[in-house]
Length: 599
Image 1 (cartoon, rainbow, N blue to C red):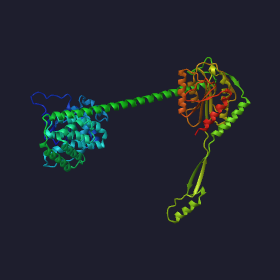
Image 2 (tube, rainbow, N blue to C red):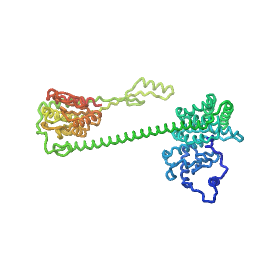
Image 3 (cartoon, helix red, strand yellow):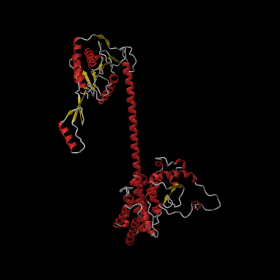
Image 4 (cartoon, rainbow, N blue to C red):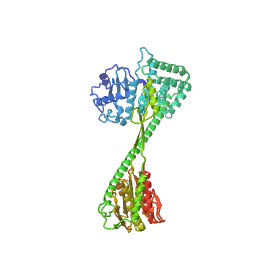
């Protein structure tokens, strides 16, 4: 077995002579390779640049050409500081298609890159030199043990190269099995070192190598295989420069084989059996790697799909925000006109019937609600206490005595006898209340109490805090602003009637959300929906989507109903009012609770 030929002694024939030796001198022009060797110079130079990262050495040269002097797919010459690489490993790629300097380009030729990583492992860790006069058979055994040792050492510093080292095993091991230089028991032992040694350093998995392990145990015997396993395991721990220890392990390897070989029968078809077992191992590793690549591709596709879905969701939300802004701008117009779902003025269907002066009861209710809102919004002052060694502050006598004692003892005083308390006022949160009232024909009884409630809440909010805002929208298929988000207290009550058909609660919520910033934390936020929710499936789905977005953002959503036949909108807090006249009190109570819960 010629597995050791990945580390070569210096060539005795010059490069030019070795190149000419490939061709028979029959008088004809030498045959030209499919691609000129000169075209591979750039590839070799770029491989040399990447070899610096793989091996940590900057003194190496990489030559890449079709065919190699050693006959191996690749070889490392320690004394020459050269890595020789067979360009045919890149097939079917041509030189102009290969760019090793670009990180990630190696994914297009994993087999070639795996062999290159293997040679980089030799370059980094095969730095021990055989002493003069060493037994060639012992050196051969040491180089056999070196194959898995350098890959294990490389894996410690570059664990992500494991995939490529698994690929290189299929490229490097199989030719050695098919054309062995060792025979009999030594052949089986070499296969065990190449395959099971890679298993023990973590390149191959235990399940993948079971066929070779079972065959080698049958041919070598359990005792000899255990002895050889201990030898290569010990060799894996050998230092890179320790030639003495490495050759000692190789000597034990040879002694173990010499002692056991005479008593072990050699199957006549041993080479075929070993080739078949190694083929099973390589097929298993190829299947595992293919499954891993498929899993990685599936994960990448899933991440790409998730990113695409997130981008689409962000784009959809941005589009919804733009649409909500346009809806709010069209609804809260200065003229008080009714608008269609697309924001254009509606030719008919304005539910507003006029305005009136507020009654004494409504003015009294607005004043009471204003006081309740101020009380609910009140926050205690925060206190922050700090200590210091010097005034200002309140003197703590115990700390002062401790400071004097520290000073008398000659130590650095650490006690801080003065305490200062700083009190700060906590800002009161503003209020945001949006009211959406259904003005379809079935909601006529809610018109008067909701009009009163809208004025009371708007008046109280304006008197409580200049940053508080309220707004009321009447909706059927069209949208009409009854009160607008303004800091001024309304002077008159807007009255309206309910004669519409169909429903457009989704756009009404969008307009209130954008106009009052109901999705933005930092304020007491409440959305009141006055409706019996007798909607179609599409109308309900649009409304529920908006309600869920608001509740997720922390806005309270209250649904007021007046009849027992009313439906409940999912996500809202349902409140049934047997008497429509109690709507102002219910809305006022909910607004007070909303601002009280604000942190």
